[in-house]
Image 1: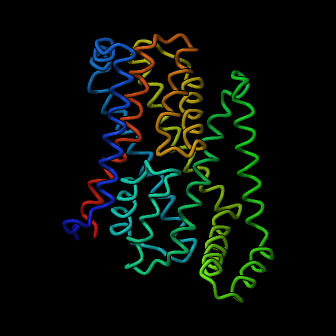
Image 2: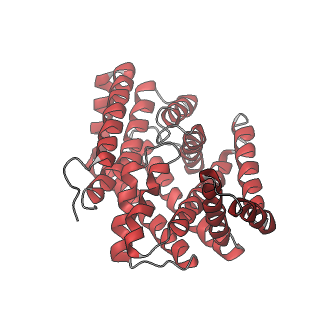
Length: 311
């Protein structure tokens, strides 16, 4: 099924985000020295670039398997031939604040019998698992970077508190009954939200949480290893633990900033930490640009391709 002419607002949003990011990245390159950046890209070479894309693709596929497991837990299994294109289509809108644009998957799965409450609960379970996984990887450098400790501690406290609150079934049921007794539109929204929460909590039983965290840590570690490989190819090797921490902490700041795709915040943190570790500015900018192109924007490009084939 293809998008009808004039019916492609999601794709327009993708194009706008790409254009804005391109302007930002161009400005970064000019600031660091255009010739130095180009020379560093040439130094990396096609083999490393392809390897980075392969590691990013493994990240997406691992998260897709986890997504499928969540839907199965919620009694809404979908054949992978249907689910895979829908899941990847969601990446087209990953540059939305908090990745909320990825909830497009709920719209695309509804004709296949997946209730919106189940797909939205799986989406929020994914976000929570990703945040926990990033926190685990960022904790690698917790003692070496004192300023990162409060951020990681507060983020972990927020996630744990939210997960504990969601387990309070009696509270959710009480709020649900209270809202059901009312006819206003906002009350209906509360009812729907309670239904999503009741689905969501099923994704965080101990076995389900262990599964989600395991897939998430391995998936994001793959991109962290790619970042470490990239730094080595640029002639400025860092220990694997340091490289993974820099990548994970930059992703964490980008996520909690709630900026679209973490644009600006993730790049600033990554460049700053690389410079702190002795990188010349041009090399730090180059490493950041290549990393973001091979992770975030590779996902957006794949998503746009799959989205163009959806209704």
